[in-house]
Length: 365
Image (cartoon, rainbow, N blue to C red; front, side):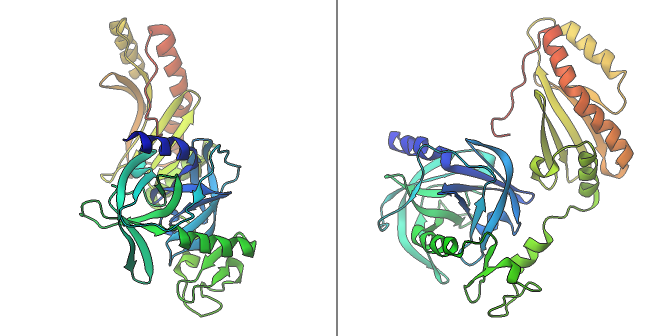
């Protein structure tokens, strides 16, 4: 990364938002008090999880959804404090301009790539896009494309699969146009019709049809229905809710949940092969007292019912493993309840009594 690009990242970082839904993760950025992202990132939901450098994970409200421009606005429940607010570009973009893409591809926060504008205006359907060659990947969608003056020139929107860095961003002037019209409405639940292009108050939509042109609005249906887990996922979330856990905030996908419990993190995954693993990284193995530590783990394992210690490389885990066909509400409630209760206690004991080291967690969790 060049020094100039690093300066742009340092300036813009606090404005970059991570957007999460049960369907995946994407990026966004702050303009004024609104979080800007792509419509496909919010997945047709009214509520999504947002987080930022100065904002802990929380539920944001999707207040504008525009399938035509693949554009959405999110309102944060709390003010996001930034020292250097981002501004939209005040001039035209030219072929050959240096641009910088910032986002969270694959959950890797604040990934930054630099490139040039290959074509300042590339028509795709009825919409002009900025074509650029900075590398972007799934998860970059909704993030800002910046120029060297640290202005937003576009919104990273899509790539051409299996191509060599062919990225496309919705130009800033579309965002300026939409934001002005949206703010003038002074209403926080707006859908833009993809046929007549009018901005419609959601409360005026009947049976998911546009009241002006009569077209079916799929996004209205998705927003009305929301996310509804089914089967084993529904059962798992029912168990977690019974443990007084905040399930919506914990979702990383439809089959993955992460929780902060005192000083530890608990990760639950439901795999395609039917296995459900709930585990917690308790600590790392010390360089001394290893045999004594192992003896303790073995003796405790013999006492457990449905929990077990395990070691992966130098990290000690406490886990519950079960096949989906064997999961019941009562069994899950008992096993997971004990895991959430005992994991912090064992973590502290192993570190205080045996000199174990603090676990290392992925900084993006």
